[in-house]
Structures are given as C-alpha cells and as structure tokens.
Amino acid sequence: MGIFGRRQTAVSEPPSAAGTGASVAEATSRGVALDPALRALTGRWTIDRPHSHIGFSVRHAMVTTVRGAFTDYDSALYFDGAQPSESRAELVIRVASVDTGVEQRDAHIVGADFFDARRFPEMTFRSTSTVHEGGETFRMTGDLTIRDVTRPVDLQLDYLGYVLDPFGFERAGFDGTTTIDRTEWGLVYNQRLKAGGTMVSEKVRLQFDISAIRSTS
Image 1 (cartoon, rainbow, N blue to C red):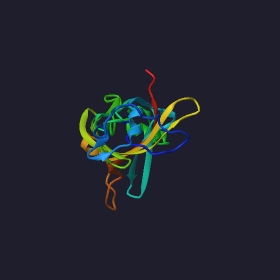
Image 2: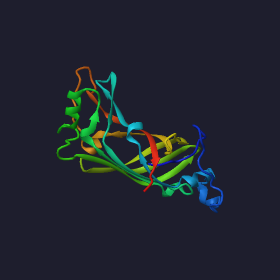
Image 3: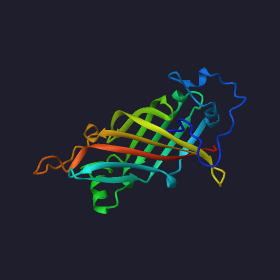
Image 4: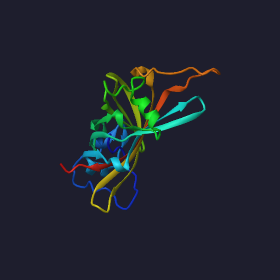
C-alpha cells in the first residue's frame, strides 16, 4: 500500500515535480490525469505502527459489533507517482498480536477455532495491481493469505494527504477498507442462535488507517 493521490493538507506540500520530464500520459491512469507533484513522492515507504491501525470489525450475536486490531506486523510499500499501476505493497501480520480488548476473546481468536496461530502464525497481503478510480480513490487488488489459504481481495484506498512532520519525516496517509467472507479462508467456527442467525458473522470488514513514512534506505 502506498500513496495513491494528493490532497493539500497539513503544513507543507510535496516537493515540486518540476524538471522531471515526465509526460502527461505517464501521469495518467485509466484516462484520469494525476497531479504531477505526485512524481516527487515516488519511492519506498513503511507503515508507522504507533500512528496506524490495522483493524477489523465483525457483527456479534446479530446485535452488536466487535472491533479489534493487529499490533505486530511488517510492511514494504512502493509508490510510483507517475504510474500508480506500478505501485505495490506487502504486509505480513503476526496473528497472535490480535487485540480486541478482552483477553479471553483474544485467546479464542488465536486458537484452533479461528486463526490457529501455532500452525499458521502469519497472515499476508501481497498486491497484484493498483488502479486509479478517479479523484483521490484507488483500488488495490492483492492476494490475502490466511491459514495457508490464498484468495484475491480488492481494497478501496482513499488518500488523505502529505506532510513533512516536525521531526523531518515525510508522511502520507490513507484509509483502506474491504469486506471478506472469513469462511473462504477456512475460518468456519460458529454457533447458531435459537432465534435464528449466528453468534459471529461470516462477513468481516478489514480497515487500514495508515500513516506511511518515506524509507531512508
């Protein structure tokens, strides 16, 4: 995941792209012109974990929503500001880091009924394509692997802005969302309710609230 659009926010703008020599065609995806200043943001980025949130939400007992997050993960992001279709991302999440705020529930989630963390300690997302949908919205398609099952997913990505922070770090932010059917990855545990329905919804919403920092190496 990377920086997929530009909105003038915060206290400074991206560096000027003047002199890059890139053509208008190079800055166009699916016929939608991109801001030329994005070329200056081309490069490698990483997710700043203390200021980001890799989370999920799922309906519980048909009447409420449980929310949680993963706190331990690695990221490798590359953004191509002239051709966003060349952008790519990889995210490796340690599933044992799940945190829903309830210790007993977390232990159940990492156990054999759900993630089975002892056998499958990581889940991964590796992008396969990125498309500019228009404005500040992009779609990234990638392979999501859970419990050694790999299936494609589409993320909607909304660019939030760029800033040079007081510590000299270049930051860019975006929100990403997608909804999956957990049973397609082998997470089939459930209990039926007497009144109908299930204890845990099969639909899970994944949420990526990202602050990315430009890599210096």
